Amino acid sequence: MMETIKNWGRCCRRWPAHLKLKIMRYVVMNLFLAVLNYATSPHCWWVGWVALGWGLSLSMEIISWYYTDKEEK
Image (spheres, rainbow, N blue to C red):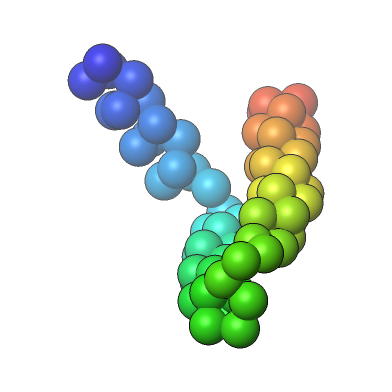
């Protein structure tokens, strides 16, 4: 378990700044949208669809970076 956490930490340190910024923007904006969703229509949680779509896009970008980074070296 500890080795997995250490490997994840090493991987995250290698990420370029633009990916870290996009991840931070994803987290902050989805928290804001969740609060907005709760305040305006707590009976219908549409924010899950936004987080899912945006998260898929972000994860595909991270996977793409990971594999293209390996090919360049």
